[in-house]
Image (tube, rainbow, N blue to C red; front, side, top):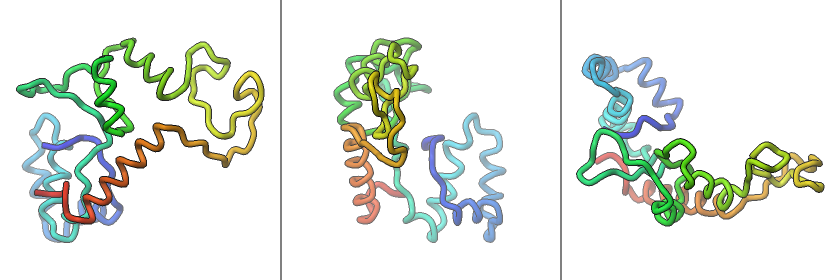
Length: 171
């Protein structure tokens, strides 16, 4: 099984739709009665077609912590997971309890936002100007990457390097 979160190339989606070698339809019938067929269908298809198997990057950009031994669902993330979660560079985390204080810490320290600011809690970008912050829209094309963008860039760079060398792909 794999992740239900993925990005698929147009050429692979066309292959899934047209299925010139019948594999997509065969797999579709096989996975029809699975609880979460997207967690296996696309992965099985892409890894069994030589044309696409070397186009994969085995990462869904999520930080997920599993119990040991693993259970059906991941465990809830908490403040104790902040260090490894940040170090992972992952853009997303799963899963949090509703209103967990870890979410407040992420908002305040990583996203630099607060529910009390005049912007309603959004993350200010390079276009924000004026006082109070973001009361004036400046250059909408300006990007002001923060430390999170640098962590994400590091993760993407590492994943691309691994994929180019054949690591972290279909096994």
